[in-house]
Length: 58
Image 1 (cartoon, helix red, strand yellow):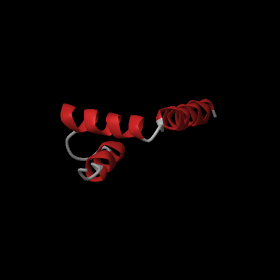
Image 2 (cartoon, one colour):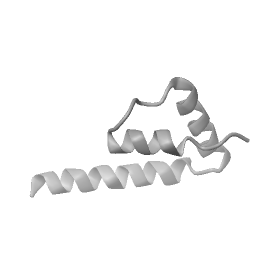
Image 3 (cartoon, one colour):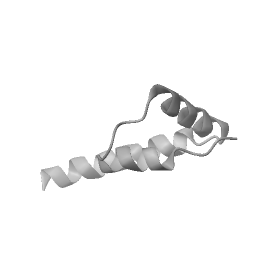
Image 4 (cartoon, one colour):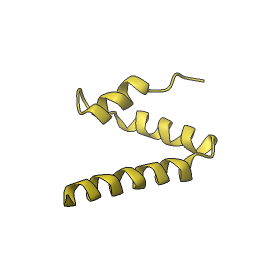
């Protein structure tokens, strides 16, 4: 098992550094699928986007 690309993920989230490569994205996606977390991650992303949209309307 390889290490999670947390450093790359946080760099992407924080907008610093280079975005991850295709291999990193695919590995992350496979790990999400292996753990059955697809719906959880999607729900969290949707909640985050809704919060951003709501705060933009204020």
